[in-house]
Length: 273
Image 1: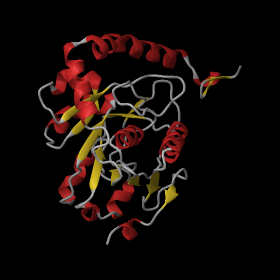
Image 2: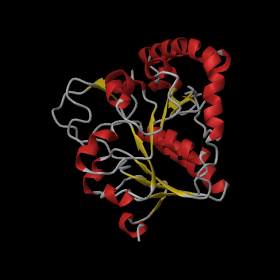
Image 3: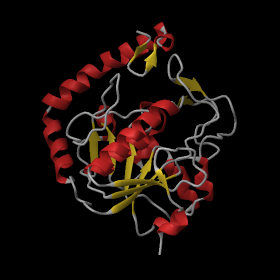
Image 4: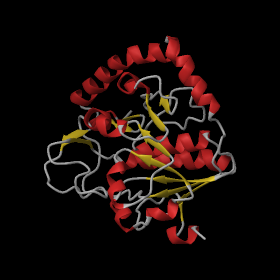
C-alpha cells in the first residue's frame, strides 16, 4: 500500500503526523461540547431554523482571488451572497456587502478575529471558536469541523462537516443546506504562486505583496498562511458538484480567468439584467 486516503506515504512525514495528532487531541473537548454542552442545543436549533430558507433561489459565493480586482461586485447588490475569510478588505473599494459570511480556518481566526468581530451580517463560524465570539448573538451559527482521511460533502449541518482544502467548500455545504438551487462562484482563481502539501501545512509569509489574493496585504509579510492544496480542493469541488447535481441543482463558475475546471463556466456579466 503506497497511499493512505489521498496521501502518498512519502508525504506523511513525522512532523505532519505529529501535527495532525496534536490537532486531534485539541479537538477532544470541542467534540464533547458539540454533543453534550448546554449551548449545543441552542446552536443546533439555529441551524435547523435556516434549513431551506432560500429554497429554489440563486446565490453567489465570493472567494478572494486576484480576479476580484477585475470583478464588479456592485452588480451583486440585489443578490444573496456569501463572503469568506478576509474578503472584508475589499469593502474599502465597493459598496458591496455579503449577505452571509463564512470563516472556518484556524489560521484566519488566530490572526484576524478582531476584524471578523466588526462585521454585522449573519456569520457561519467554526464551533471551536465559540468562546471568542460568544453565544448570545443569534446571527452567529457555529459549525463543527471534522478531520478525516477522505473528505465528504455534509448535507446536514447539525452534524460535523469537512472544511477540506478551501473555505469555499464549507460555503458550498452551507449554500446547499440553505436550499439554493443555483450557486455561482466568483473570485475562485484556483491559481497560486505556491501550492502543494507541506510537512506542517503552514508557512510564514516572506514577501511584501500578496500575489495570491485581491489585496496586496491579504497575507502581510510576517503573517502565517496555509499552503493551498489544489488537489484536495479539486476533490472537494467534485464532491460538491456531485451532491448538487444529484439533487437537480447546479454550481457555476463565473470567475474571470479562473483556473478551476470542475464547474461549468459562465460569463459573469451575462448573469445580470
